[in-house]
Length: 115
Image (cartoon, rainbow, N blue to C red; front, side):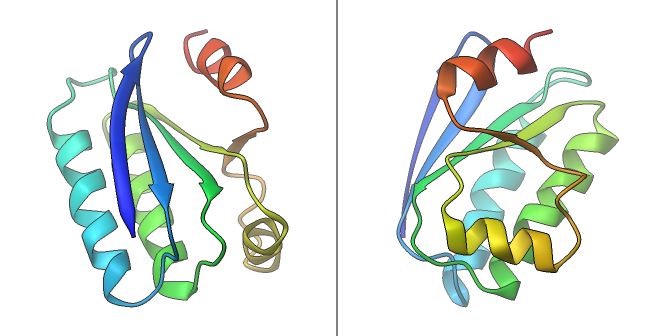
């Protein structure tokens, strides 16, 4: 798994490539935690671009849920971009569909997160 971190209009975008399973989930958690820790209260805006993530297991989903909780504590926002069918199905089955902001385009996500 590879993660490219970039910023656009005050939103930190994590372009994730590869499967988010097993020990890769721990690497992603560390990266996300670092991004959240470096943001000021109310300024944590994370967008996880999952366009190149073919698969995520329960440990990967746990990392995303933990990120959501950490961002909420800092009064920030987190969004999921370009969910594939399998990851969307996982989120639906886990009954988490209502807590995550989901976007199909980066422009839409950036605009929504900056409102």
